[in-house]
Image (cartoon, rainbow, N blue to C red):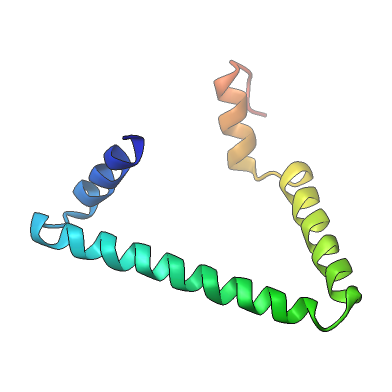
Length: 89
């Protein structure tokens, strides 16, 4: 039920007419399924090249985790600071 409210909020913010909502959702879900298939097939094909690709994927995941934990943007620090009642310096 939560997703319905999100969809309605997005449609309202973009001013999507009721007649087009079903079509947009249909093609959005279809596109998500097709792209998921494409990326799974591409990832599987890359893994068939050798074990070094798995190591490369692991390094990419670790780098992404490092970036998301250590290099937060100024806006993120401001929001977190304001949420917990701190001062933004």
